[in-house]
Length: 350
Ligand code: IPM
Ligand code: MN
View 1 (tube, rainbow, N blue to C red):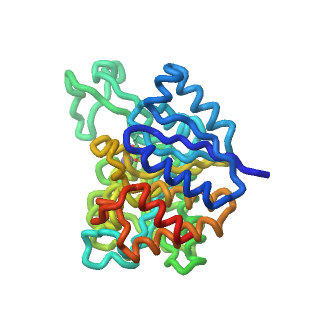
View 2 (view 1 turned 60 degrees about the horizontal axis):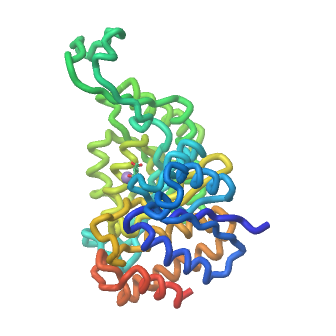
View 3 (view 1 turned 90 degrees about the vertical axis):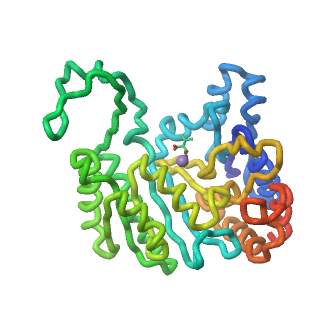
């Protein structure tokens, strides 16, 4: 049966990447139907308050979503992540020869960040410390709560840590079949946060014992932020709580060409959606200068998810070819091509 893809262009510069990528996907003549929503400004003008509901209904009516990224005008992210419980945010960090890396030798970098996507500081509970007073909380060294100030809640659960750990170990096994080392690296701040991050660490280590064939390492997150750069070639699958995963995935992207090439997919049970790691690049809106590679590689992940593995492979190959050839790249990669021109170059090689 023909699968349906909800396409949400998003805000600011994001549609300038999504729309040419959608044209490219259409050229591929896959057995897919595309349900196209308007970009943020137009969606707001047309639907106002109802735009969130319109997005939600379109997402629910489709098998998957390609999402461009939003600065708030397109109210879809909350539904895509928490509404659809897409708990595993998968962010490949693979160097494409020809991309612009600050490393002398980026060739061979090929790892995947698996970011827990539901909890941690993203539970979104903040308030004034006065509200905590009745709980009579004290710090680890017995210090009382400050008189005034604000707090944020960080929640780490056994269940969600276990679920993301299994996801990471399964992925490591899968990648080993295509020649990767079969190694999971976990990281968090377990020394300072022994109760929350300590739980994450403990649960992942426990899950590791169920996968004796997969090598397991873990590091404190500040140390690991350095290792991502120093030991990038040794990484395979990296599993992280939500906030560190957010921060370190941007850091990792820098190694292989920046946010312009950083793809992601968020997977739940029975649903997944795909989006570039980058934001909406409001500083270059209207210039056509956004690099659509991140959106394109996210689409390749989507094709794989939809069972169109061959199409995904040929799309990736075409992208690799354009980078290797090097004459039609966007400004972030040292070229002068627009998003449209880059997409046309990829289309020609398909
Ligand atoms: C990302 C983004 C989001 C996040 C923002 C837009 C809420 O930075 O997907 O990495 O923090 O998860
Ligand atoms: Mn981010």
